Structures are given as structure tokens and as C-alpha cells.
Image (cartoon, rainbow, N blue to C red; front, side, top):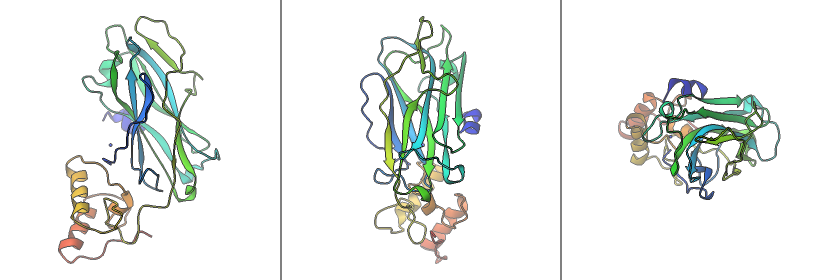
Length: 268
């Protein structure tokens, strides 16, 4: 990914696409959920998809999203994982090739007070493709999460006006800039439940039997070396409990399973 996106800032656990009609934005899937719910300290990734069936090419975009608690209370920065917007290359064209005027992905408010907001803005010239008619792909990732203090509440994502302008701005090829409300599938809320790590660490795939077996090892190897999905429960994959997920955790798991090594660290 572009280094700028990393500065501003996929769990093969994919969930069914949320229906939203034939034209607009949707949350197509969510990574990191456990049985459809959010567990504390586990990264959540919202996949944002755009379907353009307007009959025209979208050449200008200015849109925002907000992450908030369902009870609308303030989210203290020390207790909340701020929302981070990221992007990935779209099949056939990179963002730069689609939008040559500019493309910006920003964290507009990530102080943890109230709703955290993120936005994306893009402008293409007449000879750049933009988002063509019948475009239907994922375009953005929004990373966030919740901590232990919010168990019993729900974490929500919704479309919102971009803070700087107070407007959504979507325009089509050869049109003047117009302010419009593009269809959106949300809001979507997910209950926050107890943590995913139970007893000793090592149940990397977070299976319900809480047994450490070869499937856990395979998931960790695939993630580290084969660009596989992140572990379903990051704390379970942190075998040595040092809060860093790296090769030392893999070695500790192999040692425990096959070489009579010490027990993995306790979750608590």
C-alpha cells in the first residue's frame, strides 16, 4: 500500500454483503468479528464498496464516515481505537490513475471524543477514468475497534457529511459539481462482547473448543509468510504475551506443540 495511506491510517472472516440497492456505497464485509460481534482489543476492518449504476462516470468524490458508540456517549481517547481510513489499488487502475487531479484519504477527527470521522476526496480530469458506469468494487478500508470498557454497548459506522464542507459532493463526467446524497447501506452497529482470549494463548483461529492444534499453527504461518488473513483474535496469536505479533510468537507456538516448550502466556 502507498506509504501515505499507511501514515494516515485485510481475517478471511468475511460476512454477507449488506444490501443497499443498485447504486451507492455499502459495507460489503467486516473483518475481525466473532459470531457477528466485536470483541475488545481486536481490530475491526470495514470494507467499503462502491456500485455505480448511474449510467455516468463519477469524476469527483467528497464523502465521510463516522464511527461512534450507540449510546452516543463520548469515547475517551485512552479507551478507544481511533478510526483510520486506508485504501487499496482498484482492479485495473490505481487510485492515482483513476483520479489524477488529487485523491486524499484523511482522519478528520480521531481524538476519541464523540464520533470519529474519516473522509475521502478525489478529483479526475476529463481523460481519467474515475469510477465508470457499472463499477462495482471495494474502494476503502476503515480500521477501528473497542476496548474492555465498552462491553455491552455497540460500535456503529455511518455515512456522514465531510467536516470541512458539511456536504457530500459527488459529480459525474461533464457535469458541474453537485451536492448529492449518494445511497448508503448504513448505519450498521455491532455489539461489543467480552474479550476473545481465554486461558492460555494459542487458539489462533479462535475456535469454540479453545483447543490449540495444527489449524492454529497453519493460520499463523499463512498470515506471516503467505499474505493470509490476520488471526481472528490477535491476543490469542500473541503467544509470548509481549503485545507484538512476530516470528517469536510462531517459534513459541512450534516449541510448545512439538518440542516440549513452555506453555504460552496467559491471556490475563
